[in-house]
Image (tube, rainbow, N blue to C red; front, side, top):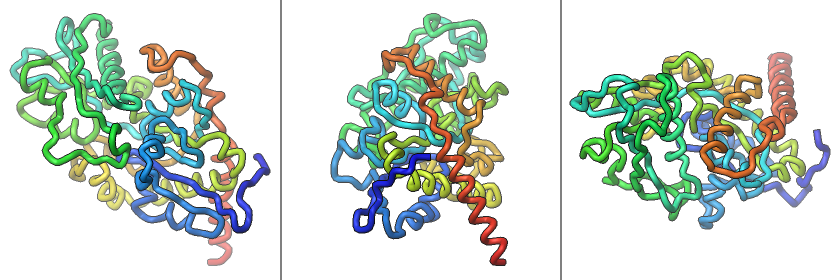
Length: 357
């Protein structure tokens, strides 16, 4: 563990948190105010990336250029940022499965994956996005599904569907404007495409709509590597310079996530109620439909070989599809000691609590 420390009396360490609006340990810790409380202590100042007045700072959620930023969420932006040379480190990974489905119109005559051969599959295109992770997610979903029956994406027609970018004005703090249409869903309903790929609770909700037929729910596949996509697995990243200068801050951040995961495992109902607004205003039933009955057990950051292999699978996909030119070794991106130190810290706290009881 590095002993360097930029935190000195009168010179507090400034750090930023950002997370996707979805089911993450960070989201729970923020909703419970545990993250804010941890770094309200002397020596640190915690900022929400979304609250920055600078678009470039807010867009660090995607390109990871803001030093002192902790990110937990979808893996395409951090993998892409590392792939184009951003010096970051993965200090934890969570694995939380989510709904991934391919839907067609009920009257399309398409019933199985093999029926997609020669058909038009919609792919969102956000031209002004820093990194079009929604596009990458759809491409990966189609590739996975087609591979199950020996097909490739060259056996179908991928149709670009131009969509308003989610980060060209407000960065990750942007919310879906009232009345904005889902261009992918519109294209399916209007017959511009034959199939679309959807994720999260919204996707699960539409899979239950009698107007549509679900060709596949990738989330039900037994092989976890076939379920890999933008939301699975989810790395916890920080820039290496900050990690080297402020190792104890990184350890404390991870300790908050570990405590949050421990709490979540014992409080399923509250977890579900907290996740519902994070997942696009979903109902509890839709959260369960999207993430499974045991979602509350999925928040512990780990660096197991299986989790790392999942991240490598996604990295290899993005490189193969040209999202970045220079490949990199996933193991060189992983820094394991902060999580080990965080586990020790949490155990010391637990032992102290037992002694005081």
